[in-house]
Length: 79
Image (cartoon, rainbow, N blue to C red; front, side, top):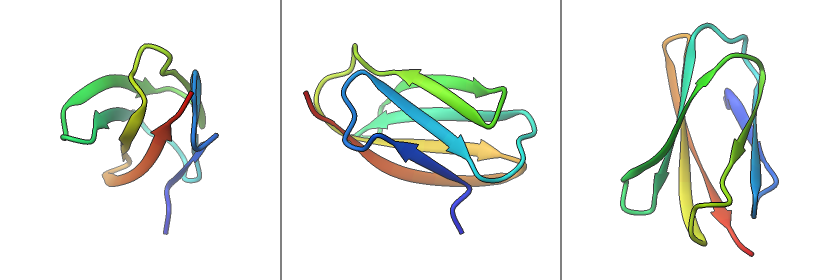
């Protein structure tokens, strides 16, 4: 089962990360297609806005660490 969802996908400037499960001191990592971390944020609420306008177009992955669970989903930046 998914613990979060992403929208819009593809994205251009902002990406919303919506947690489906209750939060408890979570973390968000964004990695590029080669696995290099390009953005990191702390989860403070069930909806988090990530500004991605400084990232290049292409395929990326969002990894969430929340309540001992880890899940990764992909998204695309397209402008």
